[in-house]
Length: 291
Ligand SMILES: C[S@@+](CC[C@H](N)C(=O)[O-])C[C@H]1O[C@@H](n2cnc3c(N)ncnc32)[C@H](O)[C@@H]1O
Image (cartoon, rainbow, N blue to C red; front, side, top):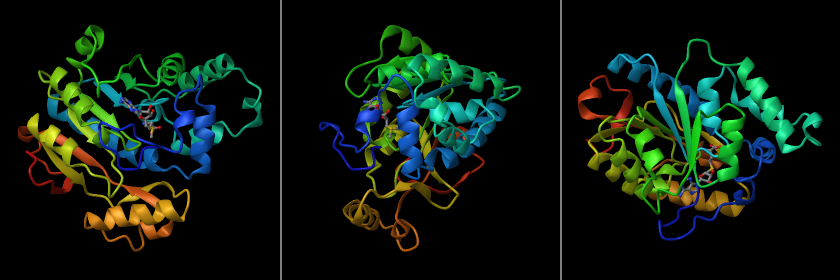
């Protein structure tokens, strides 16, 4: 889970690194269950609303949606299916998954997801991540239509990904990484410039979002903080992590009593839209310097 500040030059150190890229999603979602992971629930609810706004604004029947730094694809999974985060997190607690092979998990998940496809939704979902195995799981399970294991923070997209990005309508991101990867965001928005995708992302309170907001601004997006209270991301691993998070959040002007003091990282949602399409405000405030 990427919650700690890190410069784009340094590898971002996380406590869940070893479960980001396994042949199936079991260990990741079991760990997320244990960590009290909630971001995807709040984020996906908002993503669905923003998706519908965008479809109305542009009169689109179906959208091309990029789940950026998708991992196993929880954001796409919750947008595409009539399932809750709890459904997903509780699924892998069933002991029947203990002895299953990755192939069996994928086959069961493919069937499960197919039985819960959201009626009338024909959106196409693509994942980008550096975790190639996680992406393969997502494609095999039917969460993604396609996926690209490319590190856009380090290099330009390959030809196939570039062609897909040229048709991208909406970029969604949860798990708190987009703001850590401003060069990747810049490459995504550059390749998608003709289509002017909206971007919705869920940074942790206290993390430095300035570079990512500047990237969105440079691509002509007006960025708003969505009008909802900060929500739980996951439980702090220990008192030191909590103290750091409180100091970071306070340094950026947040009141942490009743929020991070409760023992959880908290996140919020930023929405970037082209200025001419941001006529009906969704946010409680526009980020200065954007738009
Ligand atoms: C906290 S996880 C979130 C995964 C997923 N969005 C979720 O909420 O379950 C962060 C993800 O960022 C990915 N990541 C790290 N560096 C990346 C990069 N340069 N490009 C794309 N993804 C990256 C990791 O592999 C990992 O899957």
